[in-house]
Image 1 (cartoon, protein in one colour):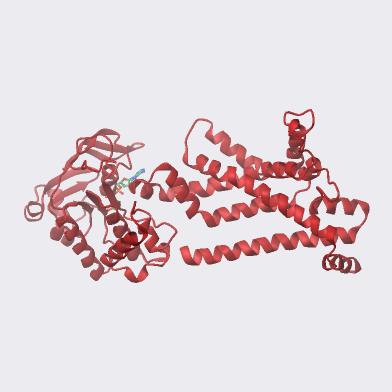
Image 2: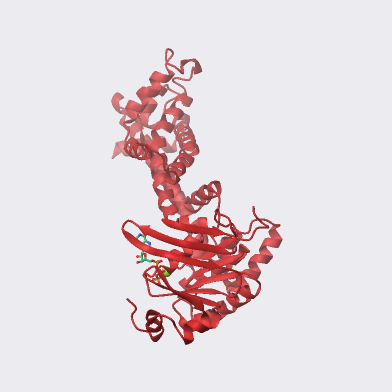
Amino acid sequence: MHAGMSDLPIHIDQASVRAGDVTILDGVSLAIAPGKPTILVGPNGSGKSTLIRLCMGLIEASSGRITWGGRNNQGERCAMVFQRPVMLRRTAAANIDFVLASGSRSARDERIAQLLKQVGLERLRDRPARRLSGGEQQRLALARALALNPDVLFLDEPTASLDPAATKAVEDIIRSTSDAGIKIVMATHDLGQARRLAGDIAFLVRGKLTEYSTSEAFFTSPATPQAAAFLRGDLVL
Amino acid sequence: MSEGANAFDLIFSGEAKLYSIVALSLYVSVCAVALAAFVGFPLGAFLALSRFPGRSVLVVTMNAFMGLPPVVVGLVVFLLLSRSGPLGHWGILFTPRAMIIAQALLVLPIIVALSRQTIEDLWEEYRDELNAMRVGPVRCVVTLLWDGRFSLMTTLLAGFGRASAEVGTVILVGGNIDGFTRTMTTAIALETSKGDLPLAMGLGVVLITIVLAINAMAWGVRRVGELRAG
Ligand SMILES: Nc1ncnc2c1ncn2[C@@H]1O[C@H](COP(=O)(O)OP(=O)(O)OP(=O)(O)O)[C@@H](O)[C@H]1O
Ligand SMILES: [Mg+2]
C-alpha cells in the first residue's frame, strides 16, 4: 500500500505499556534508524518481547507515542519472528507461500525453494510445518518473515533453540540481510551473538531502557552498574 | 431373535419403499446441515472475532439453543409456514423443503456455537502471527476456517447426528406422508406404534449403520488430512 514509504525510522517516545497495575514498559524512548542491527538485551521479563510487539503495532502504548517513518499508523513494511512462532496447519512450503503476495505459481515456487535453502530446510519442504522440531520451526518462521521483503525485521530470540551450526547459519542470514539494507532489531540472551552482530545495544531492566549505546561502548565500558553486573553474569534485580 | 432376522431380511430384500425412506432421510439431513453450515460457519467466525455489545448474550443463547427441543422448533416452523402464517404463501408445509428448513434451524445453533469456540481458540493462537503478517480480516477468517477444518468437520458431524436422529420437527412440518415426507425416524415411530416391530427394527439398524459409516468416513478423511497437513 505504501510501497514507496519506508517505516524507518521508528521513533518511540516515552512509551509505557501497562497491563492492569503491572508496568511492563516504563517510559522507553528509542529511535530505530537504518544501519547495523539493534540488539535488545536484558534479563528475563525485562520487556524485550513487549518492546518488539509495540514496534510491530501488535499492542498499543498505554502512554507515550510511537511513529513509523514519521507517520502515526503502524508500518506495513515490518516483519517479525516470534519467540515461539506459530505455524499454520499446512506444509512448510505452504507456510511461506501464505505470505507471498503475488506472482506466478512457478515464480513463487522458486522463491520458496530459495528461502528454504537459505534457512537449510529444503529437505523438509513438504512436511507439515507443525510437525517440525522447535529449531526447524524457528528457521521456517525466519524464512516466512524474509518472504515478506520487509524494511525492518524484528527477531525475538531467533536462535534460542538452535544447534550451533544452525545458529551460525542464522547469524549469517542476519548479517547478509542487514547488509542488504534491511534493518534488524533482535532480542537475544546470547551476549557473544550480541557482540558479533550488534551495531547498537539497548539494555532493558524491569521495563526501563537502562542503557543504550553502541555495541563497542556497551561491552567495553558499560555506563551503569546494572549493565556491568549483567555482563559479568550476575543477577540483575 | 426372529424379529431381528426379519429386519435384516427386509433390508436385504431391497424393498423399494425402504430405499425411498432412507434416501429422503439422507437428502433432508444433508441439505439441512449444508444450509446450516453455509450460514453457521461465517456467523460462528464473526462471533469469534468480533467484539460488540450484546455479543455474550448471543454466545450464551447459541450455546443454550444447542439443546433446543426439536418439537418446539417444529412447532415454530409449522406456525411460520402454515397457510395463515407469515410464510404461508410459500406453500411448502408438509414438503421436504419445510423439513430441511426446520432441521437447519435445529442444527444452526450447534454449528454456530461449536465453530465459534473452535475459531476463537485458534484465533487466540494465531492472532499475533497473522497481525504481524499484516493479514486482512477476511483472509484471517478464511485462514482460521481452513486451519480449523478438522475440528469444524466434527462440528458438521455433530450437526448431522442431531438432524438425522430427530423426529419431532420433521413429523410436525413434514407430516410423515407415505412416499413423500416419511423419513427413517418418523417411519420408526409410526411402525412401532402400529406394532410392526420388524420394519421399525430394520429401519433402526439402517439409520445407525448410516451414521456409523458417515462418521467412519469423516474419521478417515481427518486422519489422512492430518497426516498431510499436521
Ligand atoms: N499481557 C500481559 N499481562 C501481564 N503481564 C505481562 C503481559 N505480557 C507480558 N507481561 C509481563 O511483562 C514482563 C515482560 O515480558 P516480556 O515477554 O516482554 O519479557 P522479555 O524481556 O521478552 O523476557 P524473556 O527474556 O523471558 O523473553 C514479564 O514479567 C511478563 O510477565
Ligand atoms: Mg521475550
